[in-house]
Image (cartoon, rainbow, N blue to C red):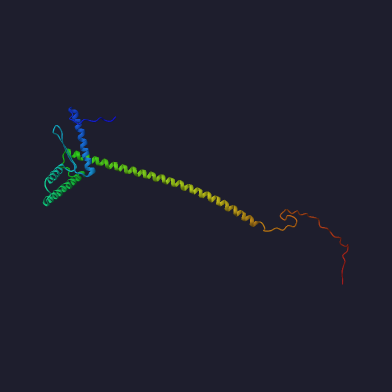
Length: 233
């Protein structure tokens, strides 16, 4: 269930009134700080508690905010003559110079310089600002490191996929080379067989390439005359 609507009226219980004041005051200061940062506005907030305690917030300095408010309020009550317009812009320039000077002073204090004139309260505020800034820097640094780790992880996955694809292509090329080598060897064997056989054959009724059987027989002695015939002249 949602929260019920709160009746806007004075809280009778002093303890509840003080707790509500603290919560609402902190929320109001937070909104004022966010407005000054997000919209680059000059914001001044002054709050007096029921006991007369002062609480204030200023994006630059309360003195410059009040002076600027009084000057602008005065300018609305009078016509903008050339002389008053010149004075108005002179006051604006002076106000901007004060803001620049204040920003430079804050910057030097953030760098640890010119801290001699600060009291316990000012040093505590400066410490809180530094802790908030340091926390923001660390958060940004961690986020950058996380993004870089994710990017490297993605690159590693892509490199692994490319490596697997290259191994697959190498395996296919190797198989194609083996098949091509087999075809070349088969073709070479055919060429060798073709060159070793004669281009034509002569058939004499028998197979010249078949085995030849030879039969040896004793030589026959012819009858010679018992006496040699002598021929003479």
